[in-house]
Amino acid sequence: MDGYKFQRLEVYQLGLEYLDNLYETIHQYPKLEEYNLKSQTIRAGTSIVLIIAEGSTSLSDAEQSRFLTMSIRSFLETAACLDIAERRAYLNASTLKSIRKKGKTLFVKLCRFRNSLR
Image (cartoon, rainbow, N blue to C red; front, side, top):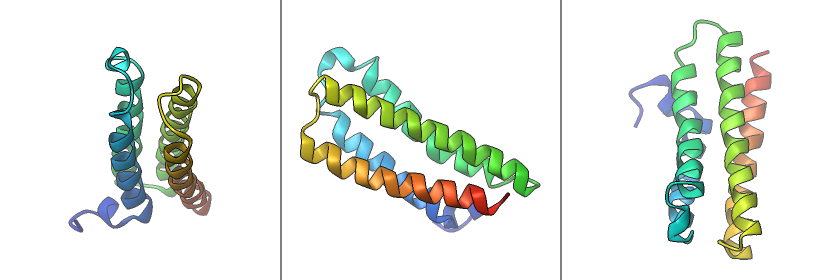
């Protein structure tokens, strides 16, 4: 995967890994969440990587920074989804700790990348 600029970005690769983790965990959600929390978690996680890809074609650092801000917002949406899953006891503590740790790494790198463009 190295045909496009965004595919070489570390934050893109981390975003894909985080999305993989989300897909692996949502199967633990109950069926009643199929079209609510499960769907929303995956849409937000998918949005992280799609927005990074879209923003990589920006003509200026300021524009790419704006896209990274949107990607960060999508990440935070997944964090809120995990909070809801935790409150509903859909995920065990070990699973939550693992995905949050990986998510924090992604979040920090997204913020650093965005800040480097300012």
